[in-house]
Amino acid sequence: MIEIEGPDGVIYEFPEGTDDATMQKAMQQVYGAPQQAQPAGQGFGNNVAQAAGDGLFFGFGDEISARLNAMTGYDANTGTYGNWGTTYDDQLAAVRGQEKQFREDHPYVATGAEIGGAMIPAVAGVGAVGQAASLGGKVARGAAAGAAMGGLYGFGEGEGRAADRADNAIGSAVTGGLVGGAIPLAGSALGSLFRNRAQSKAIANAAKGAPTTEELRSMGNALYKQVDDAGVQIKPESFSALRESLLDRLRSGTGFDELPGPGSLTPNTGRVMQIMEQADNTLTGTPTAALPFKSLDQMRRQAGAAAGNVANKTDQAAGMSVIQGLDDFVEKLGPDDVVAGDPQALQSAITKAREVWGRMSKSQLVDDAMERSENYLSGSASGMRNQFKNILQNKKLAARFTAAERAAMRQVTHGGPLSQLVNLAGGGLAQMGTIATGAGLGGVPGAAAGAAVATGQRALQEALVARAAERARAAIASGALNRPEVAQQLAIAGKGSERALNHLLFGAAPQTANALQQLLQGQ
Image (tube, rainbow, N blue to C red; front, side, top):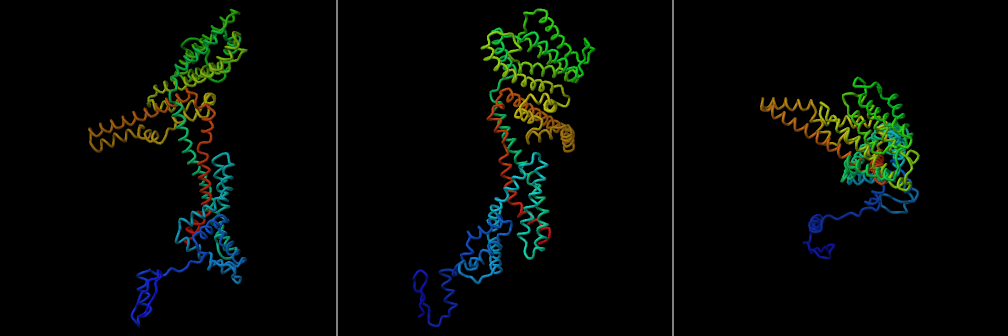
């Protein structure tokens, strides 16, 4: 009998004369095929490190490893030291063979490790893009950085003489420039997405429990009454200077017509200025007189009639100019503009009154825009977007709002993805198409059904825009968007995500450029 001991110590007996192949097959059925010892140089961790080194050194990782192996006597084939007879070429072939096998066995791990290594030099590309002020500048800098990184990687990944590597480098540089130029666009898109989400969240939070315009007006009047009760009222000369500045503003920038009566180009604004002139004459004729704050509010309401005159653009612009001038005067009111009463009461009440008045005036401006939108034949949704757009495009009006408040109004003019989709579906051409489709599918009943669907689309569109407009007004009225911590959060929102994506994409840019180049060459 032939006795063979297994790896676990069990003795197996075979008849005399059994050939080796038969015994080996029988043992394999019990214990499986024998495992060959893997050289240390082919270990998983070593291969991961080698892939990362290729990314870190722009494709020169295999040459660097081969040179170090030859200098230190390390044999990549056996994973042992002391082989001083090994050459650079032998080690280069061994390293590249192991790299190729590792990529075939673990393609995702190899790619991830290489991109991870490339993340370190990618900092230079991210830094170059971050220094540009505009998106166009970022694209240009990204293209330059991508071309440089792609060219280096293409040269490092090439084989043979320098001339052969240069051909590969040029192609990779071109594709790298295209890839690098696209990276800032992707980063900007992601940054905008996160920025919009942060803005929407901040606006929604600020709008919760916000006061109405009338509530703010009542608060402001109560605060200004405290000033009035303390004996603090507007000096005649300050009011006279206000009226003269408003006249100068109207004459120089709005087409104001000072002719009296309904034949005037600006009848409503003209009436406001007549009221102010009468008050000015009364104050001037009575040296001891002073103007209560509530009188300014009454004048502002009168100017609102002109600002809401959508049928007369000249009168509307003039009325809005008067409102802006009155609000600016109240917000900048100082001790030199008032008759001295109780100085302590003035200091404690006027700051808060000014802050509330400022919120009220901006809230009222948005309220007025929402009210004017009802007069648009194209519908209130279109009217609101146009009215909000008019505020944002008017430099003087837009300057009264903070960046966060303007962002809240832009959500009305632009809307989110759902609002944009509903807006597209609820437009005039889309509605006609819905009705026509219904008629084509079901005749007169189908056309009626299509008309009902189109009406529903328009109603939904107007509801979404009205909701966004009221939310913007409430957020502005609350004053929460002006808090430093909120402003800081909105200022940096999306920037971290944009940088992170740019960093990741620049880390992958050299490999992507080289792969595209090889694809174009049919390799």
